[in-house]
Length: 158
Image (cartoon, rainbow, N blue to C red):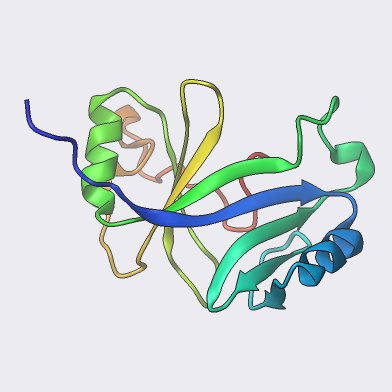
């Protein structure tokens, strides 16, 4: 049996869902993070950077849209990946359902979302230049002509 493919290269970011956006921003700025560029999502939020890396994504939700009971602020974990095709082939072979999307402009990076055995959401991000064959796009097995790709303005787990 061969070793598994190294799908994860490094930790990328965490996402926090909050109904206290300004308070959250100030808290993390006091720890040394700074607000930086973010794709044009339709939902409010911000990305906080450590150096050149966006390490914390904050998504704002109204108080009545927060999970009840609050499961904690961590929404998902994200990693930077190497080979999207190899990952999707492995997930498909293992029977793991995944969602696929592209970040809105100007990024265009690929994102793959799936859950771990404990129900935690995992995101692996890939360079926008990578190509995804049609047979690996969700919905292909059902004969759908249009892949089921998460809308680009919908953050994970919301």
